Length: 193
Image (cartoon, rainbow, N blue to C red; front, top):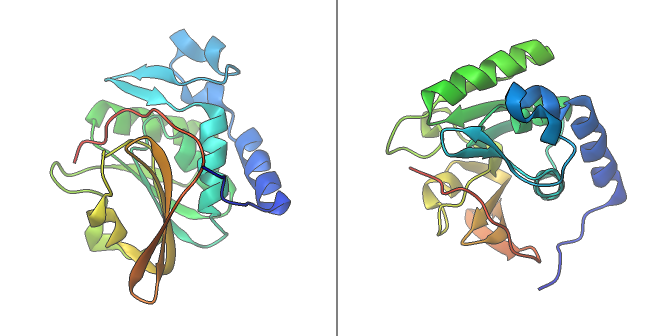
């Protein structure tokens, strides 16, 4: 399976944003020493802070631009929400675990980010009442296409999500969802709706 092409300019923007949002600041103190390691790190509550190379690839595929409204599903410790804000987007994180919502917001405030993470409503994916969204980033695997999130995309919008281990890009064009799969296999914690 081949990778979806991404421009060098997009790669550089993502790299700079990731450097500006230090991963260590979004990890619990007991595992901060693992921040430079390219692997997922457990943050409690059966959640992980995703592998940096995977986060970079997802953000490259997402191509969030300044001023775009971005929904960050499964925001965890708030790291990806902070990176999206560094990219100039207007992110809103959503997380199901109340303790992670609290942790993420404390991390974002300490980082000086205006972005915040909200409590997800059990049984509802995303924030449909606040859509449509220009971009949706999903950091957990639903096992199948999360159609409820696709429905929250604005015309011309894009979602990047792992679907049954495959990194999937969905573009909303002309009222239809155009789906592409990026090369490689990925392992994520399950997305609980």
